[in-house]
Image (cartoon, rainbow, N blue to C red; front, side):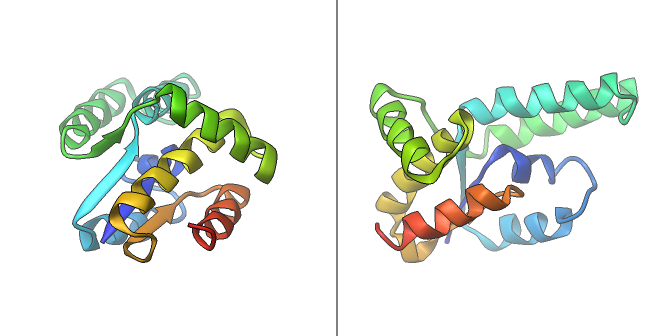
Length: 140
């Protein structure tokens, strides 16, 4: 199985919050874990925000960054290309998504077409994005 993680799901691997154990279980049960290259920047930004909000200590942030960097190398990265951006723009219109969410959806579609939609799982903590991924999967 192939798993696509958006940023909200990827972060659950490093921050203990509702749904973290579910994401860990998904990652452990899949052969390939994929995400958008932009996810790294989004994740680092979210972690830095947690530090600014004092939800992470200086050492905690350093430890989490190190873990993210190690894990990042093992993920399949979907590059942001002109074609992906065009598809994401169409998906933003069709599903009423924000820009980055539509990029994640387009990256999921790319992976699902390669691995087979029946062999691809989408993971996000965002309900609207998850609904859009389910609707999209029915059309692939």
